Length: 191
Image (cartoon, rainbow, N blue to C red):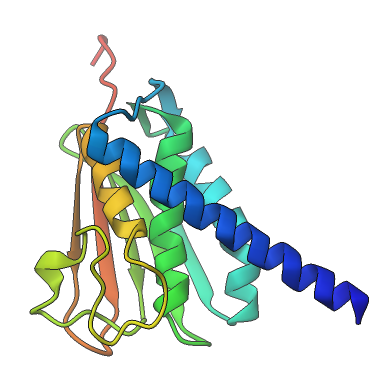
């Protein structure tokens, strides 16, 4: 009994710490005070680390995950912590809105000097009327019961700070969602 109580306290403390960090990040982004520590980042490693972070949540909800990554290293200039935060926000969102027994697919490919990360789920989907607002701070679909609407706003701002783009598509309620992140590659002088 005591162990369960301690686990609950720890889980709630972690959630509260994440909420505070998200609020601080939104404040920094809004004030233009967020700084990136740029270095070459191999996206495969960051994606694998983010997947490892959500692995337990996937198992609890019996969500299958299919991951297809480029065989050769895909390297961008970025802040590894912030890029992992982008990927974690998208994966956490997918897990949150995908029902038990659902599926999430993650892929990484190279297209025209850009890394393209795609995260798709079989979750609740997004109404077409709400889709244009999905990345707005504190905006959530009218029927959403979870979160504050910070994660996707933070992801969008961090992607843009890295010189990239992010988009979301959905065929509607009950049809799942796909997020597409594009980041500029580091191009070798030998290419």
